[in-house]
Amino acid sequence: MNIAGATIFIVTTICALMPLGITDSAVKSEETKTEPSAKQNTSAICTKCVCDVENSLIDCTNKLTDWFTDEEWKSLQNQTIVFESIKMEHNNLTTIPALPAYGVKNLYLGYNQIASITLGAFQNLTELTKLDLSNNKLTSKTLVPDVFKGPYSQQDFEPLKNLKSLNLGYNLIHSLNDDLFEHLPYLEELSLSSNTFQVIDRLTETAVAGLSSLKVLDMSFMELSTLPDTIFHGPRDLDTLILSGNLFKQVPKALSFSKNLKRLVLDENPIGNLEGENVFPAMTSLKYLRMAYMQDIYKIGPGAFSELQNLTELILSDNKMLTELDLHALSKNVTGGDFLDYPPLDKLYLNNCNLTTLPREFLVRWDKLSVLDLRFNPWDCHTSNEYMIKYLIPRVNSTTPLLAKNVKCEYPEELKGVEVLKIVNGDFESATQGSSLVWIGIIIAILLAIPIILAGMAVYKRGHCRLCKKNEAANRTLYSRTSFNEDFHI
Image (cartoon, rainbow, N blue to C red; front, side, top):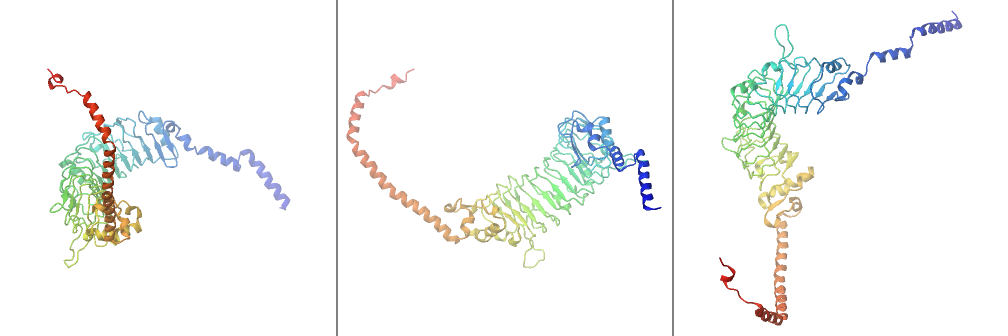
């Protein structure tokens, strides 16, 4: 076939196909029809909630009067996009029904009035990873094990194997069913914050101790004064423990079983001192310790932190009664030799306390600190703090200048209110002498002013003496004494 003939054949073939609609534009048009947009699919939900496709979020905060209808759930199930997060907070929901199958991973149901949960309410949410039930009206009777049971199999109910985070904070719970978490074997984060337990009973201890995969536990503001000694024996992988806002006066002995704990928060507890038997047990994995806003603590005694030999961050800020840091609070003689061992501190916060002195021996390798906060303390700027003034503050100013400000002297009186940074560059003693000279100058000026003032008063009196006498005589003629009985009669 020659070139002309081939050309005619191709044109003829294309023309034959065109009536059938087999063209590039037709194919694209057909593809568009078969893939409905996310907006079309979610129209039933998005008319009442905010649908954020980019962040895979449906936000129904303050927008619902009840749960989604069956039709609305079907519109979610049939769409091409699966929203991984659904927020239904602040809606006055009172109960949780059995939820239909959907691929949501993060479900936020906080700040409602939820007082009851249907058994197996979440068993169809097999992808559920995080469940927030905080700030509701859940009680101990409501939370039974089968609330969290997973999908049914031929043998038994399977666990909710993907659920890793559960927030039960700010409810009306005072105890936990000992088998509450039997369907949640892989739970890693649990918050019980702000439930007035007051006491961890045997059932609650069994429930918590059975969480072998637990890594983060929040038991803050639960009015606890003691903990069962073996409560942390089960969750061996516990990484973070929050015990803020409780009633502990002693360091809980139960901490000795949390061998792998790395972060511990003890803010706002009425511990008065850390000395004697009230010191931290051996916690070789602990790296972060926070004890702030403690109204009663006044002394960090010898050996307080000596068993925390891997500590890298220590926060003792905002303790208004704290006046004493023992120079051996951190040190320990590990090897039995002549030298003491210290933890490898990287950050130390001592701001907003009542400290006047900082022992140089409190830490040996001050140069290893990347953060040292000494602000807002009544520092004594005598020679007892010479190391802090001459070495530590200049170093802080070179690395983090903001933390060098508001480090002020309270003593001696002549340096009260003076920033330590301002006296760093000069001689330590001459700074005190310079301030003394200022006070001496003020006193001399006052002494010189006194004779001048007295002389002025004398001249004033002499010039008005005659006038005073005339006025006195006139006043006598107008004055007539009244008897006591005339003024005060009954």
